[in-house]
Length: 212
Image (tube, rainbow, N blue to C red; front, top):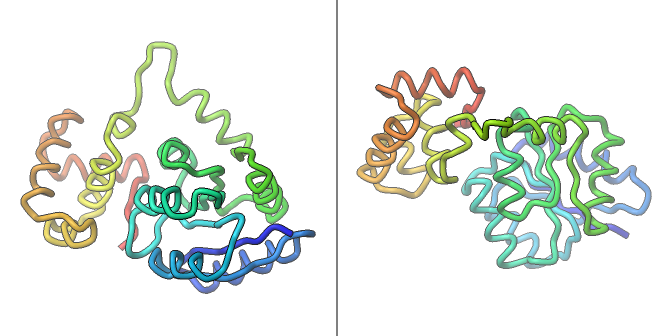
């Protein structure tokens, strides 16, 4: 029996995921969490083989959550679920230890197949994502500007580009306002942009919004 824990901050989404997973033969849902902190409390008291992890969980960034899962629960396989285009978070998620990545517009059958594959120790990417990842770096080696950013820089870019004030970004990412301002200046330089308005435009064009 594959034991699955669901981590998503939307009750309706959790209910849908629970129903889909439970209908898969040999799969049982052991618990649900709406925040990163709840997920770790759940895993401390109830064993799981696979975690279905939403890309945007309150209380922690995706990369921080994956890093903590790898540290505290190394045997648990993580299947990241996202509403964002697949090529935006997939590579970062895999580098941080995710075993699979799937957008929420895929079929229930594909979700069940993904759970089974990562539970067996495999990696899961959709055919669409595999094609996107293959073309992520072209023959000249060029990448989109945000792909060259560190994980922390990427988080600050998404937050500032989503219209958040420096103090709000600092609070959400557990940084000082001065540090966020330093990141902002670094982002403008690294990405060849001239102002925060340019950051916002870039985030809009690449659909990198950070949920509030």
